[in-house]
Image (cartoon, rainbow, N blue to C red; front, side):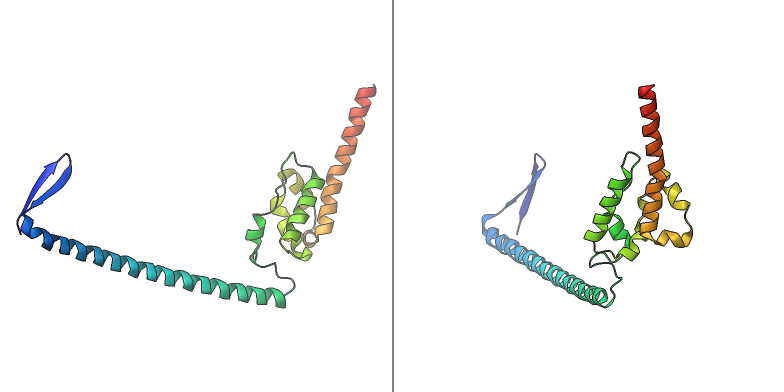
Length: 174
């Protein structure tokens, strides 16, 4: 088979004699079939790997379900660690109302099936620096009690608000 190769505008053109064309066509067809076979082989391998991963995920979900059922203090399904739940919780910004923050935090923890005994672990990382001062004033064993921590923080902000309102009212009237 004789081929003449020419280059025109960046493209490669093959010129061959007419009698060699059927041979070239069969070689091209054979190459296409090889590529198709390889493509199918990789697709089947990929599908098998995907099914294997899905089976492992189902097994892990079953085990997690058994753990949650046997351990009432366990955090809910799909949220088996503090970090994954932490991402879903609101953060207390400086302009945030303290009471609104606590209501939002409690709802988010309830929605994620976190036991109330564990709420104290989530709180410190969600507080702003000003509120963290009130948290730090507690003893280490008191920080585990969410209701106590919440009350201390609310009390920390309440006197300032009352004093500010009294001061503003006195300035306005006097």
